[in-house]
Amino acid sequence: SIRAVTVTKMSILSHGDLLKLKRWNTPTIYNGWEQITSSDAAADCFNIEETRDFMPAMGPMIGYAVTLVIKPSDPTTKAKNPDDLKKYLEYVAGVSGP
Image (cartoon, rainbow, N blue to C red):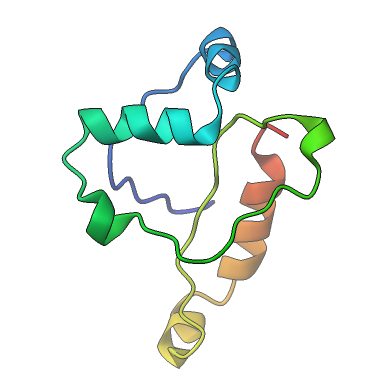
């Protein structure tokens, strides 16, 4: 089984709450988030690359992201955990959502 590392406690929003968030665009959600966190947006959250929606007709998407850390230059990681890639792919395939 996958060894999960919890960095922060995350509350799972109900489907109804996610649909409520879908009514707002990303800049609006970000502006609200910025007001209630202690994050320094100028240092932590600034993207200088253009962001473009290639399928605007599909509308906004809501949900949760699955993230990971990859260490391709560390040969000891693969030696210590040879089945991690297979376990990771099985985990991602088993996560519900879009």
